[in-house]
Image 1: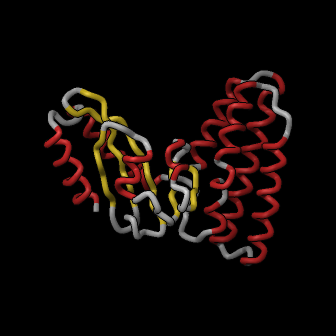
Image 2: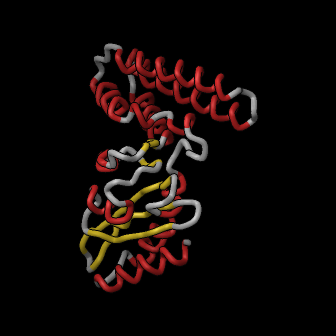
Length: 215
């Protein structure tokens, strides 16, 4: 995992002896590693990735992932899409203007990705288009936002700004962390069936065996 050019990470709640812990998944095209730990912060992720991981980290918006300072980041656009649509659903009058504008930016980014895959845009043309898209996003985030839920969302987007369009600049990077979420899914099914592990030894067996079987 530490030598992989791209890693997709995710985590979910897990119980060991009835106490809340966290099951972490780190997925690549070749291997998936699971660990079960009491926390879900930077130390737990660094235990697998190493503090100086320098590949592309494809993840959701969980703040501790941003502490991988040597990595190139791609935040999950599906999470952002969902959050924007939730704001629109709860909006009144002009409160939906900002999330609608952000969804248009996401739509343009996906269109560029699809044009690249279909061979409909040259590498130079892609770079020019990405630059324009980034400038549009910057103008949107620099605008005056008065509705508090939109302000909170905009702050999150500013923190994620450098991780929004990596998938357009680096081949082999997805726009979402679907691979990490798919790795988590069997664990969620297991959790619903038996709730977790009874002992730390059982948790260790769980992380080792699921890593082996998933790989």
